[in-house]
Length: 480
Figure (cartoon, rainbow, N blue to C red):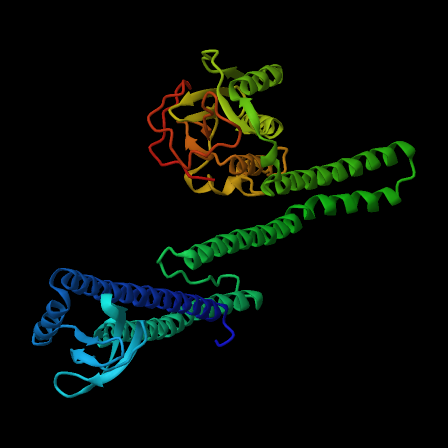
């Protein structure tokens, strides 16, 4: 703890403050000494001027009488009057033979006690020497009292600094030790360990909270990595096994046509595997967050119109209905990545076309709902059970009824990744019948620069978005 940065910092501040008090005390004492000396000199000079005026009016005898009268007054100055030859005339200072000007003189006071006085010797007309002085012990006592006060103050400052510095250093050292212990436990493999937060909302608390959020993110990514590894091993086993069987069977094929068919089938299996890995890499790239730097103003309504126009013919060929809900023609602006948002809308439409069934009706809408810009894709198919709606957003997860349909289980996982990248809310709701997928973004305000604050989880409550036979779910949206 003696090598603690906090202790050194506290010691430095205490030393600096003590030096400040010391310098302030020295300046105060010098100023006080100068002020008291000036006041003392002024009082003596006033008395010298008064006796000089007395001499001018009453003459020599008047000055002698004035000095004798003042000597009988308690707490008066000490006086002395001498001839030009130094012979004493009047006053207790007479005969001191002090030089002209200011000097110090030791003598006995009225009570017979020795004292040192500071006096001024001046010359009167006729060569007489006038001496006026006083004991400046009171000034010395005051300066000594002030000095003692500053010494005690300095000692108190140092003592408080030492005690406070030690207490502050001990508190910081204890909290840093807890952080270090948590970090070492995490290094040793305890990924669930977190840095304790005291709740004081100071710098260390905010730092600990930031570290904990970072650790939560790392833990989630590691868990996601473990889950993806497990999913890859599980979901790629079937196509790899099928590929191996095709290749083994092709070794025994002698006819060129059958061998070509086997190779074509094997290539199809390889393409399916490559497509799966491409989807995983795409999701990983999105979750990395680097695409956020490329956000630009995007019109969701235009994206929805384009996607519906592209997929409507294929939906019609399959006996399904894909349409765009009533469009007011107004732009629905957000900040985002055009390519990823297009992929998100395409995935939602493809998911509905693939799983809603024959003769299904699918409707797409992009609209403003309060402070949010919302994209909805609704169908009247079999829907998704309540207990499965969270799971279908995971990589490779497929409903039992969808096992026989094409796909790799990454479509909605990519939609969820795009929603997270844009700080949007992704909600899967019962469309009664069917499924409604709703993605709520923070709407872009007019004149807003790219990269404004996100909506932070506002809901799209009570807004009817125009889907036929679809009502808003009372369930709260689940942030993704």
